[in-house]
Image (cartoon, rainbow, N blue to C red):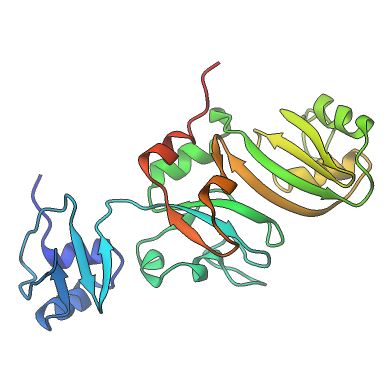
Length: 240
């Protein structure tokens, strides 16, 4: 495979158009592994490549895999309509390189959200065929009861679904707090299931995807991190 020229490398990392990246390089604004390079035709090895632009370092990544602790009142859309989009939380480079949310959380739902520019990864994580469990902490308007949990486990009928939808697991965490695990990923599923079961969801937080726990990432609301190989492996469903 032919090596990428430095201007194409910068473009692939989201630093702007190819013309703009060439200008940055020719103006001496780009360092490769600590040394300024002003030739945009240079073809540095991308393995462990570290770029420095405007006194900030960026490791070259063919694709980015990001975990965000989503705050409330942000939309999981590249074209938000009523609230800011989650991409505004990330550096501008990620918008240029077409980073997208993996699935969606409602604007008022908080917690673990994956984002990437790898289309295959996004498709695989979003596919209902993979049965990736998603764990939510739901605050309820009415007290949690054993009957409510039993109903959610058995399945509730939603208006636009051909068959009842059931939680994979469900347990009580507090008087008005339950943990619910879903694999289907239907629109507003937790909120609609609770409503169908005779309760109401007043707050919702996603705490895990597969084996990837939000608490283990130690992210405050609005903070994000790259996922490493070990964390990515936790997103693969266990084979039973």
